[in-house]
Structures are given as structure tokens and as C-alpha cells.
Picture 1 (tube, chains in turn green, purple):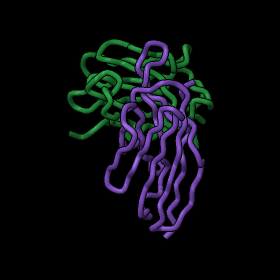
Picture 2: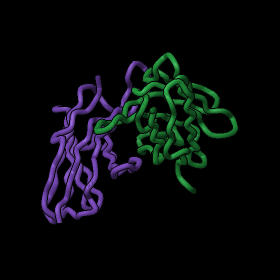
Picture 3: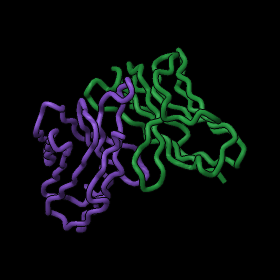
Picture 4: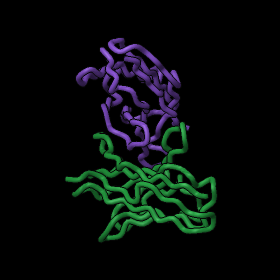
Length: 116
Length: 113
């Protein structure tokens, strides 16, 4: 089991371009969570998805950001028309149960997005 | 906000000493978790303590939870240089009807050889 896989590890985009971040959860995990981390800060919750459904997107900006977790394939976090303030590390976590079910979450290594 | 507040923000000690990090939170929780993050890497789950537990051990780690004070501490005994990392507490509970894991700002721990 390769754990939670995120790619790319590093992504550089010019202002106005689109960024697509991918997350493949651990085998058997159907719950995916996306977090954003600014330098020297903790992780901020963005969105929680279960296969084909968005369960909670309360932490995700309503404009330019979207997320999906299709029946087949990885979860995708999409940022349209990126701005410098989107530069951050984006982490994905997966769980076999809703809310981690009190067993802790498994995190990927993150995608570091730099907007130039 | 359920956001945890961690104290201190940074801690530097000598190898072999014990390191203590504290976390406070504001609302009721189901459990509290501690994670470690090495520079430029992802988070690694260290230990989870449920709201009905007061103390938990895992190797050189000892976690306490005081729900009356809404606080937790992480003790790392006999620290090693490899323990150098940022440590985050995260509380799991229901916020606005949804189960969420909310992180604190973290403590940057440096172990000097």
C-alpha cells in the first residue's frame, strides 16, 4: 500500500493559469479531505469528499476553487485563474471512515503550489 | 472557532532533554490528535486521545487531555536530533453539523545535538 499519493509535488503557475492538484487515497479509503497550509502556519480545512459527493466544502473559497472525487480515479482540486495568494502547500488526507472515525488521518506529502 | 492554540510557538532544547508542547481549544471535541511535520514534508499521525481519556503513551510520547480546561500536552522524553520537526495538535469534533479535524498553528521543535 503506497499510502496517500499526491502529485505533482511541486507546481509553478503564472497568474491567471489553472492549477490541478491530484490525490489518490489509500486503497480502501473512500473519504478524502483537502487542507491548505500557508508558510509557518497550521493546516486549514478546505473540503471533504466521499466518492462522487462533496460532503463539506465550507473551507473552500466559493470562487475559482473546485474539487471532485470521481467514481474512478483520483480526487482533483482545481484552482482557476490563480493569484499569488494561492501559493501554499496543499495536503490531502484519506480515511476509510467518515471523519477519520477516531483513528487518525493519513496524509499525503502535499503539493507545493507557487504562483509567479 | 475550534482552532487549537499551541504553546510555545518555538522550542529549542538539548538532545536528551524532555520537550513539552501544549495545546488549547475552544469547543467540545470527540478526540484530539498530534501530528509531526518534518520540513517540507507531509504530516505524520503520532497519537490520538479520545475525549474520555486523560492520558496516553506511545513509546517516548506521552499525551494528556484535560477536557475541563480544554487543553492537552505532548511530552517527548529523551529527545533526539531526529525529533526536530513541527508538531501540530488537531481536534476532531462536530462543527456546524459536520465532523471536522481542525489544526493548531504548531510548535517548531529544534533538538540541538
